[in-house]
Amino acid sequence: MRFLLVSMLVFSITAFTQEEESRESAPGVIELTVVKVKTNYIQDYLDGLELTWVAANQIQMDMGIIDGFNVYVGNNGHVYLSITYPNYAAMDPWSDEQQAEFEKKFRKVISEQDQKSTAQGYEDMREIVRVEMLDRIIFN
Image (cartoon, rainbow, N blue to C red; front, side):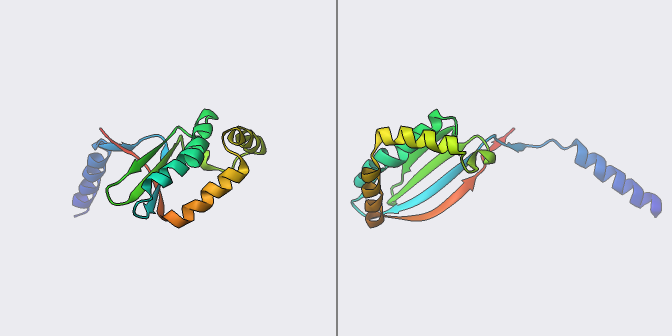
């Protein structure tokens, strides 16, 4: 009986160690924000995003903080905003130098007053449904 138990244990460990992983996590992490936009406001919302969110993310990409960003529009009144970070550590709070560099570059794109008025208009046309962190899986 003891021999049977030991042999089963040895064979199960051997079988487990020989199994290859069929998938692995890709480098990076994606932050996905799902936004419900009120009917007939998609174009206005996208215009505002271009002035604020897109400009801010382009600066972050130029600074090497993020790897990329995308905007997707669904046929259900939802807008999907994705930001790709090289890793979770890239999502840590910025240093004072990074904040100052970003602020300087962002103010060349849009004034603080224009940014505030544009962002305040978002509340009338959209609702943030959820924010998710996604890991991409590669199948071997």
